[in-house]
Image 1 (cartoon, rainbow, N blue to C red):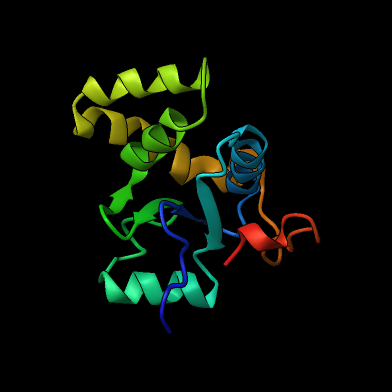
Image 2 (image 1 turned 45 degrees about the vertical axis):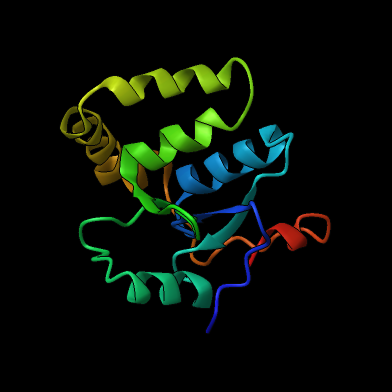
Length: 138
């Protein structure tokens, strides 16, 4: 399967059964004024294809990835902060945390990711986008 991503678009891969991840995607959709992002659940065919193609171990990274054909894959806190950097003021100010060493950012990120199902719950199946949002999902 080839990834059919429009030019100058970035793909957010997320855990489709995680309530926190789904809420985060909804937040990004609402605040993505420049229409930069497209979305796919990690569990989808597109998500699985990217995971295999880039040899990503889902035991180590299972909640959010940012994929760009030009720049490759960003993981964990780096992905989240790069996404925030595209969302306009004041959300883009969060990208200042990219100066914090990755191991510190990812420690916080991993703590939240480990507890996300316990704190926010999970769905039995991936979210199905509305008719209006369907074009944003691969």
